[in-house]
Length: 223
Image 1 (cartoon, helix red, strand yellow):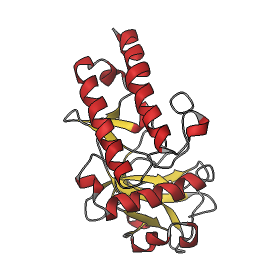
Image 2 (cartoon, rainbow, N blue to C red):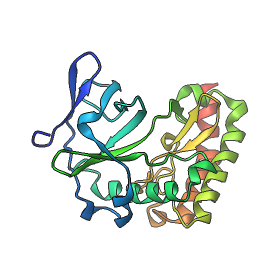
Image 3 (cartoon, rainbow, N blue to C red):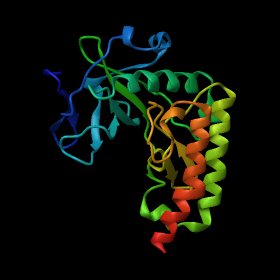
Image 4 (tube, one colour):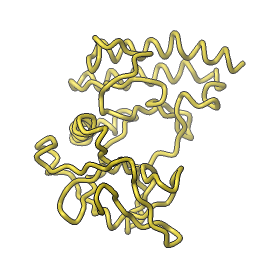
């Protein structure tokens, strides 16, 4: 790392850097359980796909061939990062990702100085519910609502609040099943009122607004 830049290897012998102000964390900044997470060294990651030459928040590969999603800790997402690590640790420890379609923690990405640059999760090839392709799949909308509600029920049964329920955090995979991602909290006011931020009530408000208001309206626009 050079200043606020994390350098990783890229296929094709180019290096990528993350330029949005990476703000590495110490273990003291994270949930105590984070010390039990697998450690993945940043130098061992290879970028395999990125939407931008300046952005490595995307698909990376480890030396043993695992495809992962890398999310860095930035100066704009410090509280959200700590919350996401905590929630992902709980999901992984309780193996909730085996019961519901939830992202889980593969490991913490560590720099040479021992600081944590970000998190790594299993790579999920998918499009968000907000993508026009999925908006036009009208026959699946009821199924996705049902699956999303089941995911929220699973989280709440284990005292976990999703937090940022919005269409961009619902992914649809190649089997046309819905997944929940992004547990950093915060919220989109179009779907969750500020007074309900990071609460059980807020999660259900988000699901209801997506399924009963936003999705029907957006689907009508796409017709």
